Image 1 (cartoon, rainbow, N blue to C red):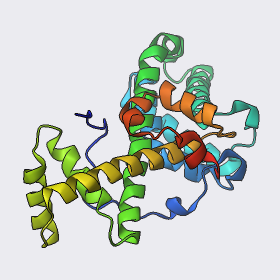
Image 2 (tube, rainbow, N blue to C red):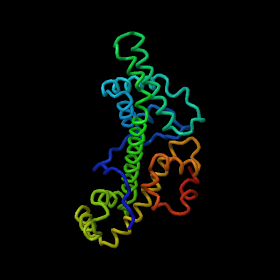
Image 3 (cartoon, helix red, strand yellow):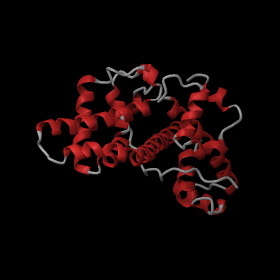
Length: 253
């Protein structure tokens, strides 16, 4: 029996956002601040782990976003390739500059030690960054799955995936089909539920691949696969990828 997809439980009502209308491709980002806002939780968690202080993290995050409002990503280069790495570096540099400014003003005597402690905290902060980045990407994939169901009347992809996420592999198809029937107000047989779940898993995998591709300057099959593996997202979808996914899903990316 396939393992469950590793992802957080989806929200009951995924909010629609104008951010969904904005391309996140490196070469097409007209307002990178919107991209940053998408991954705000990852930035906040990373800064908290990096500084060891939520108040410092909140202040640095505000300074960072203010800088993005003014300068955007003027120094960004396609050579960076992965927005995830570029964004993390930019946020880390913002933290260092924050403490250097305070140190130069001699506002707080501990600033020098705070700056010195950043390198020691970076490994733990990296773990936090990856965890939050995965969560952000998965949340956006859930939102895309929800939209797809709304746009395709015969699809129950979001509904069956949500049930599967809540109850896991141990739940019987008959039980989940009955729960889904109660939600929809019409009868869904266990066999139909299993077919919908199989399609939903494949669609979730496809949408996740596309979401990751949007964060790469050159989203070749090799680059997308490497990013999925490096971020730990590949384990969520590997068994649901068709043999031809690199060609079928990335040919128009």
